[in-house]
Length: 448
Image (cartoon, rainbow, N blue to C red; front, top):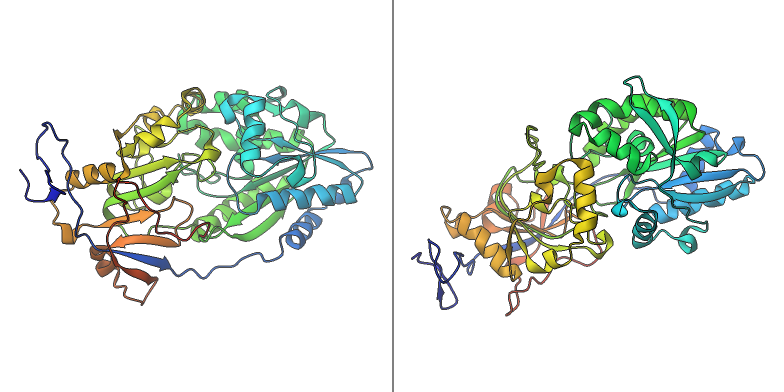
């Protein structure tokens, strides 16, 4: 029997009638705020107009031209406003704009599922002022240099022009000159489920080596008018908007990716014993939790990122409603809750996982009845480290990282105390569980 107790219940070191858990009573936590000093686009409509004007795309629109505008499956800062602005600009130049889902196999790989996914992100006909045309039908544009067929959404292919809109950021699976951005949107997104299957069958090598040659075909043969790259800052703000002509996208995206990595939010600690993530979701990251933030790819044969934090035990508590049951990425965690598991739509999740080929990310962690039990089980795993030395961080999700709940040991390591990059907002305080073991979020609502 271990000396610590959970109420009046002993915590056992071996399996018995009571599951092994370790009480965290007495652990002192601090709510801190990261100090980020980054650019922010204050006037979204003006910036969108300036960047699209720079590409000359709008001047090429003739009266009555149907213009297809992409919308992906991620929660991107100000995306409904950006899309609404593009719709208005197209109309001002005589075009007939519409939005089409460009998200590969997401939404269960169905037209209805993809349209519902957009609605969950606040993108519908009312919010953007244009129809949403969703279909899984594709046309073949030819073959890439590597022999793979190149597909394009059939509805977009019939339009007189396409404007590709996406966030440029690090991908959760691989390292390459282009990762998640306009090229990937043009290939995996605009090529729908068929193209996603064709590329993902080669695993991460397919993403790393095949996106660029396929993108070359799309940008040379499809009627792409322009690309609009969105760079987000650590606080989730639109830090920069960049308009690109089709022939510029492949050449300039690598430099924009490097800039995006510099702006990305991070957990400011290299080593953690415990990390608790309140929620995972497809609008937060394609893998539910951003792999670069938590330092875990969990892809067999692929190394983890050396510059990312090393987390010994990771707990995730919940799945967002906007995920529509897609729990790809739950396998990145070690411990979770029945609440999260009960929200999983296994049909949708299996479709996404099998398309990606990364099965480890769909495997269930150890599942517990309550939030507190899940964290205490993780603490039991880390029982070799004394309570006062336990390095614990709690976060709302891997997108919202301005506010963190950190243990006293971490605060000491960071040399904080109101100085440096961390500002103490509140503490010391116990871990915020109610009497039933439910987690009470300490973070300000809807803030980065």
